[in-house]
Structures are given as C-alpha cells and as structure tokens.
Amino acid sequence: MLSERKTLTRFLIEERGRHPAASGDFNALILDLALACKAVAKRVAAGVLSDASGAANSTNVQGEQQQKLDIVSNAMFLKATEWGGHLAGVVSEEMDAPYAIPETHRRGKYLLVIDPLDGSSNIDVNVSVGSIFSILRAPDPNQAATPADFLQPGTRQVCAGYAIYGPVTMLVLTVGTGVFGFTLEPVLGEFMLTHPNITIPAQTQEFAINASNNRFWEPAVKRYVAECLAGTTSVRGKDFNMRWIASLVAEAHRILMRGGVFLYPRDTKTPERAGRLRLLYEANPVAFLVEQAGGAATTGRERILGITPHDIHQRIGFVFGSREEVALIERYHSEEYAPDTDYPLFGERGLFRASA
Image (tube, rainbow, N blue to C red; front, side):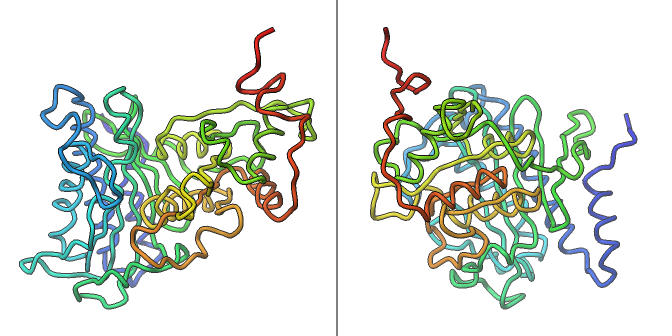
C-alpha cells in the first residue's frame, strides 16, 4: 500500500528541518487541521444519508442561512484543534466572536482562522465544497486571544490552505515556500503529495464571475467582461471561456490547477459593503496561496494581503488568478471608461444574444 509519494507528515518534517529551532507545534497544528478535513470529508460524502444534511434552523453572524453541515464542520475543527496546546484562539465564519480555548487545555502561540465549510449551499446539488483555513502568530502567546489579535494583514499568515471535497479529497496548502497539493488515499487515510510546486500560468483565456450581477458592476468590471465576451472581435484578440461554480474553494482549485481569473468585485447591489467575500476567512488565505503559486490577488485597487482588517467579519471585493489578467483589471480600475457599444453583454458573443 505504501508508495514513493511523500505523506503530509513527511513533507512537514522535511520542512521543519529547514528551521532547527522549531518546536514542532506548527506541524502538529497542521496535522490536527488535516484530521478535521478528513472528518468533514466523510460527512460530506455521506450526503443525504447523513443526519447532518439539509438546512439548520439558524443563521450565522452574516445573516446567512446555515446548513446543518456548517455547524457540524465548525464543531469538528474546534474539537480537532483546541486540545493540542498550539492555539491561543480561533475565529470562524460561523461564530460571532473568537472561540476561547477551554481552561482545561494549554494555550499556544498561534491563531486559527477557519471557514469550516465553504460553498455549503451547494451540498444538496452535489457540487464540490471545501474548508478554508489560515494560521497567524498570536501577539500574546499562551494568553486568551481577543478579536483585535486577529486583525493582522494577510502578509502575516504563516500558513494557509483549503481542503476540497469532490471526486477525490485534496488538501492544498502553503507554508510560505510554494503551494503543494495532497490527495487523500482512502484506504490508508493519508494525504499523499501529488501536486508539488503548483504554479498558476501568467496568462489565461478563462474567467469566472456571476454575470447575473452585471447591472451592479463598476465600469472597470463591465469593461473587462465585455472585452472577454467579445473575444477576437475586441482589443483582447482572443476568445475566453466563462465559468461560475458559486463555490470559492472549487473556483480557487480550478485556477491553481490550470489558470484563470476569478472576480467577485465590489458592486452597487450592496453599496454599504466593500464586497461580498470575507477578508479573514476567504480572501486572505486564498490570496496567500495564489501569490505563492505565482498569481496575484487584489480588490481591483489594492493588494489583498496588504490590507489591515478592521473587523473579524469584514467583507471585501476579491479578484485573483493569472497575474497578467489581474494586472489588467487593476489598470482598468485606474482609468476612465465609457461603455463601448461594440462589446455589449447582448452582442454577437454575449451572454444573452438575441435570437435571429
């Protein structure tokens, strides 16, 4: 059953070898997270056969309908990580305030940020979902964490990753030395290194955006999408494919595997918000992965990882993927633009082409 592939444990031990003074807490925390991902994968795979399928009679702090698996997954991550003495605190998309490590457990030097089940609204239709996590250093090690402790820019992450629960379960992570993908071997129950040194191509002909929001987009986004849709008849000079899964983990995984660009920009549908996705739980960890893979991540105007959060549930516009496309979108945000009728959404290659 054993192969020549490295296990996650071996990979982490070899990484630790680069830091002789390391205590081992960091590796142990990542392995605890991997265990939580395995547990969640099993519950997700059970689908409607599980007693945790369907909607819960509750909403999260963002006012969103929770799925039963949101709550179960959150509990699994807490149970897997609270006991080891590695954490000073945890924040989750599913909890209003930081989770206090029980007094019966030793507190540690790291902070954990989790989206325990991203894309959970897709579970009932059997679309890939995932878990996202990020690790920060605690400003006050061994002390109970406060909300302010988590308000660190993404550049201070020491690890970020996600698990994707699809045809196979994969764990994709970075510890700041590139991006590595591990596939769960179901018999041994081990994550095996299958995708070393993942790199995002600088160019692409694929983009992902929710086109139903086009009437709310800012001019720069309308311009970019219109040119992509117009393809070879536009200034781009090449045709693009459009994708939309409505699962951030699935979108990020596709882009890490083959390139592309993802846009969930700020818009006028909810003008009181700077965007839809959460900076701590979604944008920062994905941005860290994307940059480590050679891509770029931005709000459209500024680098995601350079933003200092002001709230643990802060939302933000998010654009990431192939470096040259992200740079073009940023440039468009800095320029004046009047819609060009040569590239309408309803044009020859538009989304809503009129019938002849």
